[in-house]
Length: 380
Image 1 (cartoon, rainbow, N blue to C red):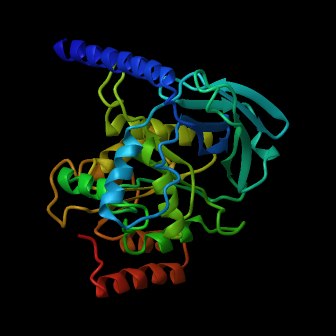
Image 2: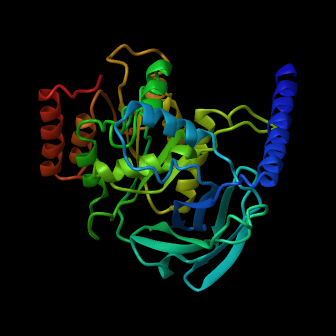
Image 3: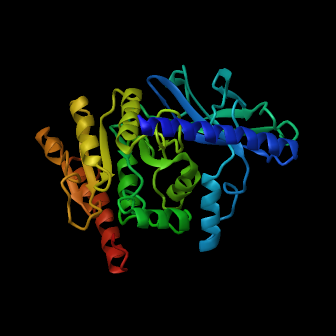
């Protein structure tokens, strides 16, 4: 009860301060220029999901890549210290449909549009979005439009992939609070490390009858939307298949601290992907640092037959706590192949044994892991 009262008081104070600060900035003519941030959406059985955000431009998104520790720390602070623009009008157009929506109190817009995916171009189509009136920013506002990419899945896709990000494809030390924040605060997309074999393995999984993007890859993480552009750039830099990112709202609201826990967020987003593609089965890939085994076991139990394999990257150097292996036995009892290893080579081999990727692709993953180990770039 006391915690709830404190949370509500903090939430009220934060929102009150935001309103006061906005009024002061507007009076002093200090409001910045709005920017429109599109996030990759997806087309599925329920329609087309699109999401984005409107904030003041503080220079973080448009900043050139840098390896400077000081500059990266400064840019990280700017990413989290955003000035959101609420109640901004967003006009959208996709195919022969168009409409409008408004941003919420955190500057987000999020909507599901009733469109047949078969009417869209594969593997990626685009929605045209445009920022209309942003209350209070009329003097600083110029016309802003953007294209929002939409993942459209091939009818010849054999399966889908749902992957974590932190400590699954990119090293962040999420299970170690000090290391995690040192990595997040002091690194850019260019200085972050992809784990050995990841790019080869994910490209192999995505490849199919319709080419390099036949089988869709989705990324579900408890990292905040503030880091979206970093993750997008990271995927491009390391030649990892791009796909919709399902990140987390980072902040305080009237009912919960920092928008809830890892498990609930991840389960909700995986369920959303399962509903969008009821004809697809999935490989689930995560790490041992945040209870992914348990989350994936619960998903598998709730959706019999739809989880093809589960692969967990061990981030603990073999020192496994009970919660880290939680769910592994349940997955195996469901006859779902599971790997638990410090690299994804074992995962690639299991996928090869199941005929999901070729032996040549398994060999590429093995060669990349071996080369990275030879250069001293093995997982820490």
